Image (cartoon, rainbow, N blue to C red):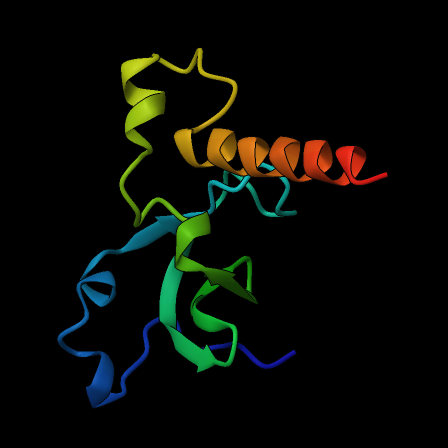
Length: 108
């Protein structure tokens, strides 16, 4: 197996703050590498958005920035000290779903 470069050497990544950080942790609870940290190896942009490339144990992982510790934590989680089951955005989506189901049920 070919060893992947530890750090991306492309000039386009030189000013990226993520390139300056040694290790990036995957924090998404359902990702197979959740809780593990890897070396920043670059970024990939496609129609689904920007993905961070991380090297963990000689394997390259492509993950959304939102699934890493590069993002700020949700203010609801900070204020609720981890006790909040739903974020504000989750509750808004739930309200839309309930409203839709009520409208659908009343049209019958």
